[in-house]
Image (cartoon, rainbow, N blue to C red; front, side, top):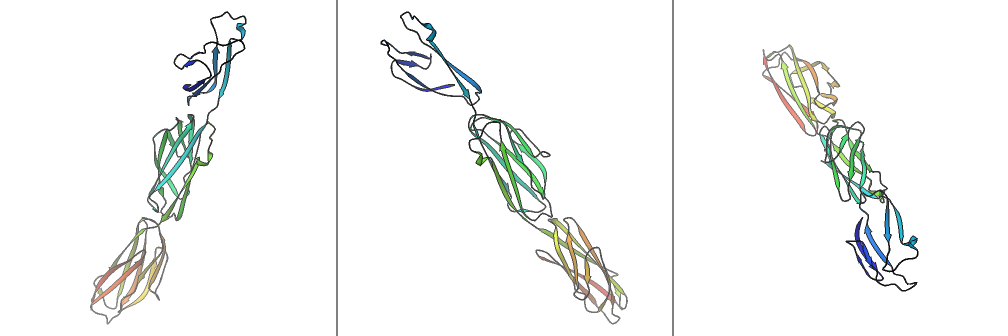
Amino acid sequence: MTYVSHSASAGVFNSGTGVWSVGNLAVNGSASLTLVVTVNPGTLGTIVNNVVVGAAEPDPNTGNNTANEPTTVTTLADLAIAKSDAPDPVVAGTTLTYTIVVTNYGPSTATSVAATDTIPAGVAYVTSVASQGGYAPGANVWTIGTLVPGASASLTLVVSVYPTTTGSLVNTVRVAGTQLDPDPSNNSTSATTGVISRADLQVSKSDAVDPVVAGTALTYTIVVTNAGPSAATSVLVTDTLPAGVTYVSSAASQGSYNSATSVWNVGNVAAGGSASLTLVVVVNPQTTGILSNTVVVGGRSLIRTLGTTQILS
């Protein structure tokens, strides 16, 4: 305990020695002393205060010259938790960082403090750094340990957002300790992160044979690649055949090509994935010069690739 203040109806109290010099007391007279102390934050169990009184005169009944006052010490620790996310919104296929801070607002020392942070669906754990204790990704528990009043501990949690994740991510974290918490309203918090998609679609085109003989077959090969970081959905490629050729057949690694509309409906392409289309045409016998064929892939922007083929008579 730590002395704070006192108030005496008579005499003087010395907080250094613990002696209250009351002075003289008349027969049947009394005096009182009020002592205010602070119980140290780490104190547990029962504290006993002993007081002994004595005077210059002989005391016929010394059995009542001492008194003991036991006090049971209970603990209260107001644990609070805060959480932030960055970046927000996050691009699917990139990393997201959560920062969690736990603070003990007292008045007692908090022991066996632990925070539970179950990462949301749509992400994968990458790494974590704790200022105190450690985070177990399998159990989703950050074991903090002891926090004295006014102390804080922080955890940085890095996750990878799946390339296919859409919508928003909601992450809730909760903290608890051994002590009774006088304000449980600040024991949990959530962070909501918006997820956006960005897919770098790339298209390439080749022709064979080049030069081609008029009246023979010409094959175009088109490859669409998604460089990520997010999955690309509902990908469409437009390949309008040039004048001077006639469509023969097509073969797609995925999706389908409509020769009437010149559209290859690719569908979804995973980050890092690709799809290919082979188009076979016949060059009309009377065609001469150069065949120019442009292919366009649709995404957040349009990407055009021009291919040219020389014609031999």
